[in-house]
Length: 137
Image (cartoon, rainbow, N blue to C red; front, top):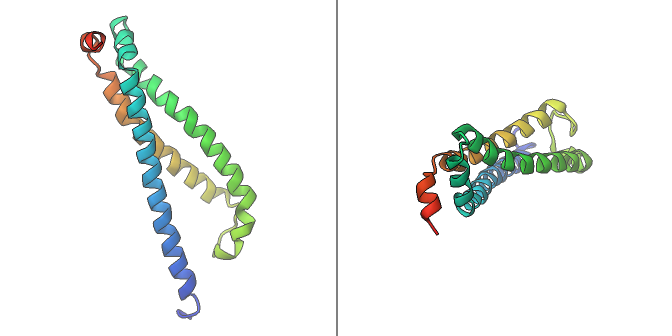
C-alpha cells in the first residue's frame, strides 16, 4: 500500500516545500516593497507626524497601502484557484478543489503573512523622528 502512494507522497512533499518557499518569498517581497516605500516617503511621514498625526495613524496608512494590494492579489488568486482547481483534481487526496475550509485557511494564512510583513515597515515609519526626516534633504 505504501509503495502505491509513494510517488504521490513525494509529489505532496515537493509541492509543500515549493509552497513554503513561495510563502516566504511573498512575505519578503511585501516587506521589501514597503521598506522601500517608507524610505522614499520618510519626509512625508515626518511631516505628518510633525503636524500631529499619531503613530497609529501612520501605521494604519502603511499597513492600509499594503493590505489593499494584498486583498486585490488574494481575490485574483482565489478566482484563479477556483477556475484551475479542476486541473489538479487527481493530485488532491481527500479534498475537493473547491473546499471552502481549505480555501479560507489558505487565504487567511496568506493575509496573515502579508500583515506581519507590512507591520514591520509600518512600525519603523511610525517612529520616524520628524526633525530628522525634515532635515534629511
